[in-house]
Length: 98
Image 1 (tube, rainbow, N blue to C red):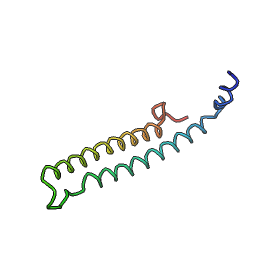
Image 2: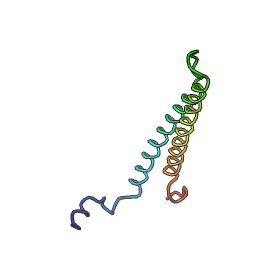
Image 3: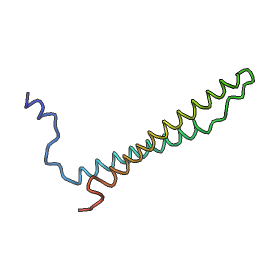
Image 4: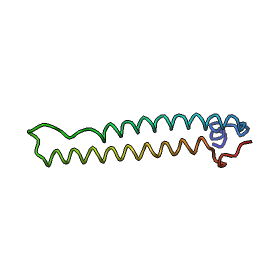
């Protein structure tokens, strides 16, 4: 059982340069996804209210509130992704270079 677990782990002798490359790649991915979600949140949040005259005012208000809450949720996910990108880009050691 131990040999099976050991065969799935990464080798311990990875160089710091390889780890920095992986961290920067993850930071780029998180940053790009965060910016895309930021744009999606803006598109959802800035949509206008339904303009159909057949819809009661209470339903239109509920639709606007639901869109606003959805936009806030997407914005929160985007902010977390951007924060993760920052942490991966700077590194675990606070930005100290070798």
